[in-house]
Image 1 (cartoon, helix red, strand yellow):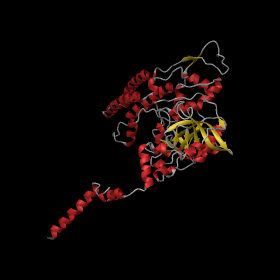
Image 2: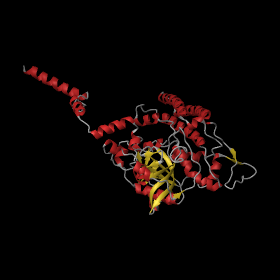
Image 3: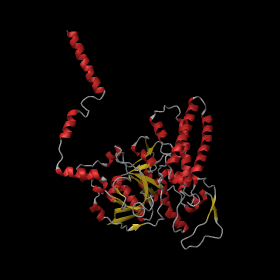
Image 4: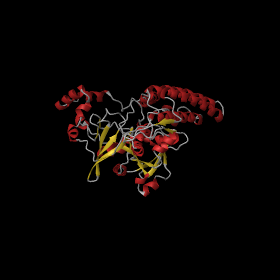
Length: 469
């Protein structure tokens, strides 16, 4: 009898542990809880609001019309810029924003009314470099299993349009630049989805072949020779989609006084045009970042954060948000545009071109609080750097910024003729990084920016910087 009782008790105990292992313990959405939830009654106001919310887009209902009515587009410090650009259905914001920083300098140097670089030209070489980076990783990481965490990150996004400031500067320094009319946009540069899918499929096939070659005992030298043949195929694919990048070109332009420059068109290579249009180069910038949760006044780099194999990963100097704001303000007041990265989709009223905290009253609509600190929002993946744009002005009161003038790359039909006003409290919440010329920084910060960085893993929340689009 005792043996039987012991056996029964053990069986019950095993069943209990088994049910917990299968997720059948006390943590489930059980019948009692469901019954209590259904039995709960809403008051009249909640039921009325439910009828309203269910029938419309909640953003239209939650719009803070009082804030919108108080808004104005007045900016008391505005920089001269060219015509609004349009990245269309591509993820090249980082590139467009980079060129928007440089355009005023070119317009001043060459005395132009407006000017636009060829984003398509730089896109071509970005795709070539990313393809090489992916294939080289497939060779060097061939001994790793396919479910290796870092390898999976590389495999998941070998050729996206996204990028970061140092992607832009690295490409410009290596390949130079050309005017837009020398290599204009194509359908596939402006709507890159299909091209990217086809090329990613081909790169995946090539990556498998390289892995098998190395894992099968072939030498790195043999794999590298195969990679070069593969890159020739990628080059041809890009030519079909984007056109052939110019090796040299002739360009004639009109100055502000409408005088045609010379009687003979000037001859350039992409690098010689870069040196003429931007004689100062692009080495005088520092990336300042606000990453709560990481120690301030330190440099951080992110592994696997480059588009060019033989260049270093990008580095950011982590500072309090007030420091970013101070140096952005100093720059804009000195007529220097500022490239920045932010979470563009948050509290953005595009119809009026407004970035403002509480532009939508979701808390009042849902009777809930949404008040996580910035550090927790980042760690939980609720906010992240998603888009790059340019500061082209600021509205100050008592020498402090009230709102910022933002030049976007979504065409004139978005915002107010392609521009947004960013309120200062939005800056605090959703701004991640600004690119500042070294000359504006304190001597102490310039020294800090040269210190050896702490390396972050590719699965750190800031890896999203690689994919600004």
